[in-house]
Length: 374
Ligand SMILES: Cc1ncc(COP(=O)(O)O)c(C=O)c1O
Image (tube, rainbow, N blue to C red; front, side, top):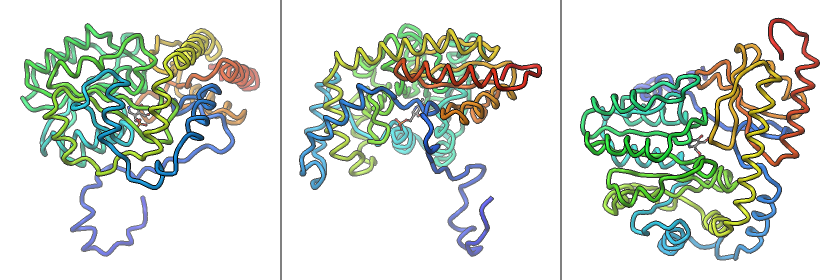
């Protein structure tokens, strides 16, 4: 808890919203290979970014971005109508913008648990109530439970899913998702589909949004194009009127010109990116095959650029994370997502993945065996 150093009147009149929400400052683990945040780690993508950044013009830096031009350009790149598209600083900000523009205090948000963590403080800030549908180890998110929750929702509720889900990697194929789209329409709910990890799954539903007015799909450039530092997501709405309504209260300059220019450059490199995605899928398959055996755990299929692994217990998970940190790799313990037995490892080029696996072998070997492996 921070020191209570603000005068009482400031606390009483202005600082009333905090509740359980803690301030969050991201920081990097110095020197470690970061396989904890699902950023894209691939030398070919680094080369493409370096080349795209070298092509930036002074006016990309000196001028406010031309969002009208960028809108037309990204609409063409993604094959969606320009009048339904808008930009946000990452998909994180899409949640903020959608919650602010399309809900009122008391609106119910139906979502997966776990899901992207910031949904919960943003809902709290808007006075929204959250109804969670829980992940079930072994089966993912039960669609019938979700459909049931939607069938009982008040009209005007907001339903949101990440697909593939972060942090579990669970994925609903388009025909399952369409059942949810139909259920939301029947109950007059809005559906926000977060495809931050869509590039790593067999299919996306970006093309669904322009056909269904109550659907909003957001695709981030953070994971799919290695641009987490650039802060850019494209949000595609089911109708121009919904897009206009969100844009009305969107940040005036949500995304920087250099971020737009580099992202457009990368989005045009379909063949090169396909090779990268294939290697990351091979990395995920290798992690899924080898890590569970090493830690004495189990892994379900993941459709993101990461592989979660269920360790025998929370202690084993914590010791894997600590052992790898000592050997220069940051991976994620999913304790904050309510999954204390789980670790999650981001995919990378195969060479890096093999080095991670060697470091995990050493961790297992060097840790005195008790009841568990790490
Ligand atoms: C499921 C999911 N959605 C959204 C985000 C936010 O990413 P960004 O704001 O970089 O697009 C994340 C980040 O980890 C995530 O895991």
